[in-house]
Amino acid sequence: MRRRLTPALALALAAALTAPVPAAADDDLGRRVLPEGDGWASAGDGTTGGAAAADENVFRVSTAAGFREAVAGDEPKIVYVEGLIDANTAPDGSPLDCEDYAVGGYTLEAYLAAYDPRVWGWEDPSGPLEEAREASQNAQAANVRYRVGSNTTIVGAGDGAELTGMSLLVHDVENVILRNLTFSDAHDCFPGWDPGDGESGNWNSEYDQIEVSGSTNVWIDHNTFDDGDRPGAGQPEYFGRRYEVHDGLLDIVRASDLVTVSWNHFDGRDKALLLGNSDGRTTDRGRLRVTWHHNHFDGLGQRAPRVRYGQVHVYNNLYTVSGDLYQYSLGAGFESQLYVENNLFDLRDGHTAGALLYNWGGTDVGGTGNGVMTDGRGRITRVDLVAEHNAAHPEALLGTGSAWTPRLDTGVQPVHALRGLERKTGAGLL
Image (cartoon, rainbow, N blue to C red; front, side, top):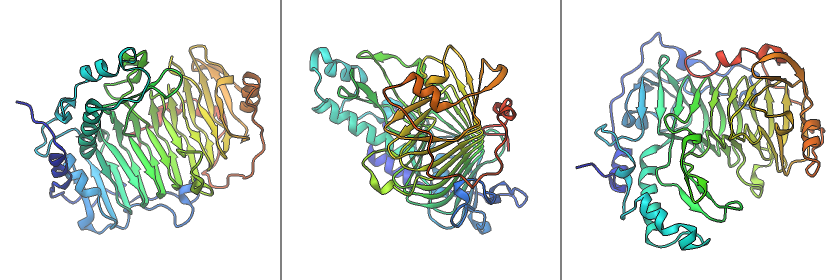
């Protein structure tokens, strides 16, 4: 008989303790700090993570319970991840699947039958099955969400460190470093149907791979983000809409500030990278200052990134623009201050430069030196992103004024130097 994870059992997992083993003295990757001037995360007091950790606060972990304990608390600490850690496991380490979280009689088949618009109409789902879905989602959330404390470095030990099924919460903390890790398939077993989302409704899910919320001085470097065995393009359709089991790869929201995102591989997600989650959150003004450099945005559908409010420097990234999910790359949202400099856009599958920018209520996009090529080969040509956008979208024009000039970078390379960037990004390449 299969184990079923009740909310009480999920809380028991959250409290489960293990005894991590101190790292070897010569394993110094965890004591490396963000170099001076390397993007917004080098501002203020800089970002050192757990570099000052005492020996008793250096851990090597290989289980979900050990990881949860090791990353908690605000004392300086270094956490080395060994091998694959699956968040969808019970306290004894046995695997859990979606059926194990289901409570209140929830099944997807029953949910689809009850809330089919041809039967239910176009009102929001309500009643026992929607309540059972929410309760089941809460049971999974208690198991797969992990909170990181301040003054923490989490780093992959070797090339195969992976956190799968896990949503890592960097909430209301400061001074965090995440490096050399694969973040894979933080899937929601219980997406909800929202008939009022868009013209035809949508399935919405929980769990970003990483959510940075209300946090300051965060460095996210040399990681891989992917959908694992659940690629978005492979999901079925229900009610005429794709059954979306993933949320974002990396969201930076709710007055977070001073973040550098560098040398990562973001692979294949539709709604990928969000900065600022509401036009009405005026407390974000003066914050959400983020630098993105030397990342590979690989086959993303949209939000690479989508920006509200913050002063955001996007430079020396490689965009592989491909696939049927593609809508746009850079989103200029409400009061956004995007500066887009010397990025390379590899246009594939018939996609054109006019789609690279999208205006979500922004006014201007600054920057220069960007280039395009076709299908990973041939000559690189300069592209004026704003001019291409305005020609394609005359109803939503953007200007080129910039109220700020980036000054925190490690040296902006010419765009032709980015041709081989995909071989240098992601986990295992430190």
